[in-house]
Length: 545
Image 1: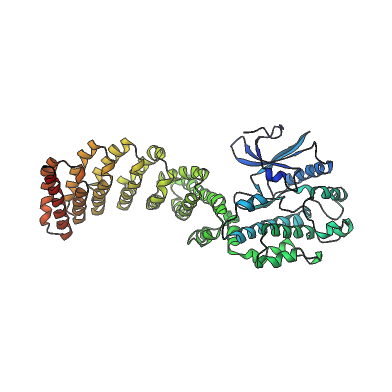
Image 2: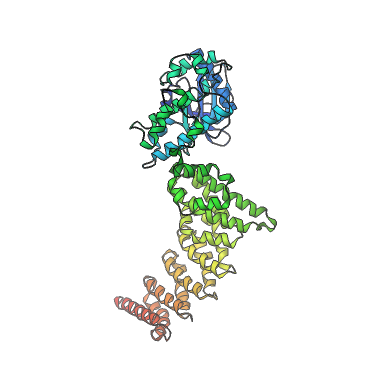
């Protein structure tokens, strides 16, 4: 896929260029899609060609690369690797898209304000870090230096002009570069005046917060909503000393929206208690408030990790099951929303992670986990392909047929129906049939009854030879069962499978078994079903002659 990153020995392959970025105010940097060769992880590649680029822009770009590589913050673009070559400056970052592209393609209907509010939160947190912890001003905040992850987090990049404003950080040199790199973007009035002395004596945040206000205006070409407008006006106040700091904006009402609070919970997920996670996941209110991208690319990964860690803890416990109770609770809480997200996302990469997890859960030696999985099998089965079901899942699933717990035996029986379309010939017509024959002698009345119902449902899927051998004896056994519901199930299944019976079988194998039920002493429903069955089969015989 493409050439290596700049030929500098970086472990990335460079893909197609993101052409929209080449037309931005940061056009001296070229942005490409990229792939990490070791594991196929997608990344973003930024390249600055020294030839043909202004010396001031090259110098600022070199500085920006070094600055970005040294900064670590959740909302500052993460630099994974990079190199300064004779011809280029090349850096690989986490995978992102330019803010402009994201605004054009990833805004959800009805959730724009929530998505922009979260982006504003990200930027205020990043600027707070730069201003308060690093004592630096970004000096180049604009739509072209803000990028967005798959999960919808805004990341601040473009550190080419990062500097202190007190004259201690080569400010003269940087100030000249500002005039080169900020072309195409309207800078704050104080900077347009070109007075370094004025800037040096103003609060550190005044440039960046003004520029963030401009970014929010760009995000709302139709006009900022009333709930945001007053904050943008303050950001761009003509009196710089009255512009609030990023820290103050982090506490503003626009960022107290439920969606922002829920997204912040995702950021703090690793330190949240089980009760806090359960409250978030149950009820659906918090999940419904979050943008789809955050669910698909952030919450799904967190839930996968929670389940995997719980399984690992259970396996490491003495006897391999000491943590089963905790695992059961985690799976019961995390798996249903994970399956919902995976279904809605229709994402191949997410499905590739969910499928082996489901198989691993089914093979756990924990009845509680197994029962929970079986109760949600309608949601689980579509995630598993036939090869996986037959090779890895069928045998562990069949172990439930012989479990000492009657509830688990019955759940296994009821859930197996949804997998029958995926079973191989041997599993369907041999192994499964033998398990069903054993269940017909189960001491539990409901299991014997449901076994007959199950056979009736899968009759059309059996090979003709197996069907001819198995069905009538199984139904006859059900019709003779002492439990009325089992007799009723046997009669109804016999009637439903009339198409598979030859006239001679009707006369010698079906009617002799059914007729006694016409006078069943225990159940009116059984008698009625017997009359219906007899009439159906007599009509079938008449039509043959």
